[in-house]
Image: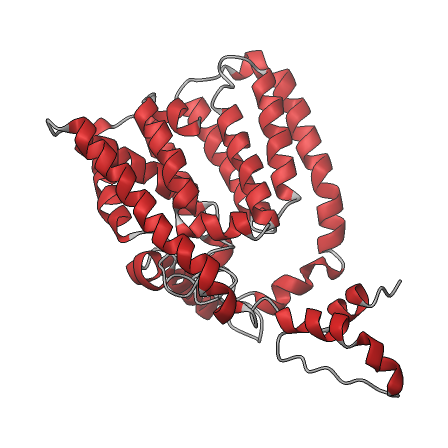
Length: 332
């Protein structure tokens, strides 16, 4: 729907949906039930509703509510959502999509609701809520200001590293299967043609999704583990859109359009089939440690023997075991 709104081409819209569905970057998170995928849904919905603000001012309120839900899903959206709102507001005003005099009332209500929604987040961040950022942030460990800027730039650039995107993928086996890039290699060609299409068409709305793709890696760039697929998850739908745009750009310039379209769809399904086979067979074997599978076995299969000992010591080799003990042993 977002692609259809931006480019008004059904083929682009359908291809972008197909690409997103089968790309390794998004697929693994959708299968493992990450809260970030729910946040991505409401983030994209917020962007989509905002683009209709010129038709009916109620969409401003709907967009605001969608963005608020995204804020409460995953930490990354607490950074990119405000930036996205600024980008959208700037575009709508610059492109003459809305007349502020006519929508000032609903804008003020939306701003009030949005600020009100930040109160719990602020209260959390002012107490123990910043502990996670202090642990994983690039500013932890006494790093200086200039060094932080350099690390941030290096981390940001790494998110667009071709090796990360098309060859190796995220090194964390909770974020990738270990034998795939975040995207397929053919996406590189399609993205290049997608950029060419946008630059040649010169429509302001089409630049918007590239701008949102550019700000997407910021949450990952401010942390030590970079490139990071999960923290930059909002990057992938815009890469899928750009791939679809590139595909249609190529299709429009060949005589055997339908044949090439079928070949393109089949090739993506074949690549996904290979990826999915590995996901079902090899991936569970090599990633069990990363998913702390052993802790479940300890606290379910051996809990009957715990009463024989005065003290049980559990290694933290697979990360923190205490929460598994509390959960599987049914501790109140």
